[in-house]
Length: 405
Image 1 (cartoon, rainbow, N blue to C red):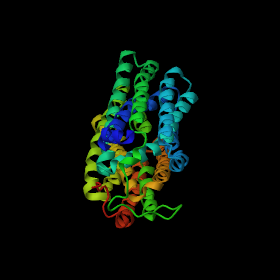
Image 2 (image 1 turned 90 degrees about the vertical axis):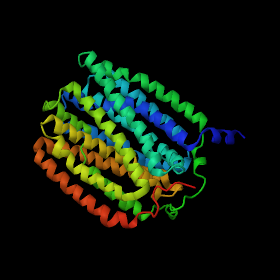
Image 3 (image 1 turned 45 degrees about the vertical axis):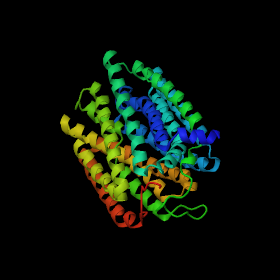
Image 4 (image 1 turned 135 degrees about the horizontal axis):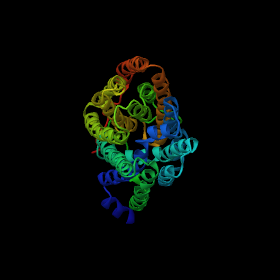
């Protein structure tokens, strides 16, 4: 009877929304830090190449670490313990950035924060996929991402306000993020008590879902889709490199950089909602926007004209919104539930390796020639678009994003 009562009280939409608020609060924490990590590392003596390496390595760690945590989630079904530990690592590491001025330690803390995301990511996505099955994959993940990025807007604005009030002192800016960090854990514990097993939201196979894969194997279309994702991300600059350009070339005042990032996070939320809605109706075709927008980013973001450079950063935010909502939702439509944690782990690992390449490649090419960045990214994205059109679309599931019932 207790389980039935919880099921009535916690609907799929309520679960998705509550988890979105958890992500909102945690995004205030780590997106606040992420918005200034490039300029902060620069003040500690880092070059553009090093910033690209550290930020790319951090994202790679956050994603490739899921090669272990994804299968672990599938084997143990210990979704909540993994989620709780992952968030705990993040909320400790970020405020600790305010306690150091050593370059190596700041870099280590940034990467440690990303490790927390690696721990919680697959388990969180599997739980969300179960709830989103009842409301539409695209919409469910899109609403979660939109709430997530509301925190992505608030965090940088909070950091910008503290920096402005303290004469651009990073220490109190990072320490201020401890408040939403504590709120994140309190809400997460409450949600865990209300929904101990989110699998109840998806009791059986959905109409149009991919057929079960043989034991130990994932569907072939998953690997093709992964290749497309890796290519699009390999030419995608990290915000660390973009913010390095904005600050060191004096495109915008240093105190405005986190505000620009907040704008990118707002666009992220809009892009997530729009692409999620379109995905539930048009399927994988909406993903063609990713290589097109990624090609445009360096053309605009690496100029020295403020308005054009900011527009490039906003395009970067739009791509991020599609990556973190619709591209995640698609995994749940091509992989059966029993293998979904593993699939999310492998998908994230590929994304992470490509992010490392993208951060290091764009950072190194930036130090050499901005023209080289533009031409290289354009070539990679042209290949990615061709792969989507020729290989992924013909093999896509018949009814992606379809709502149960």
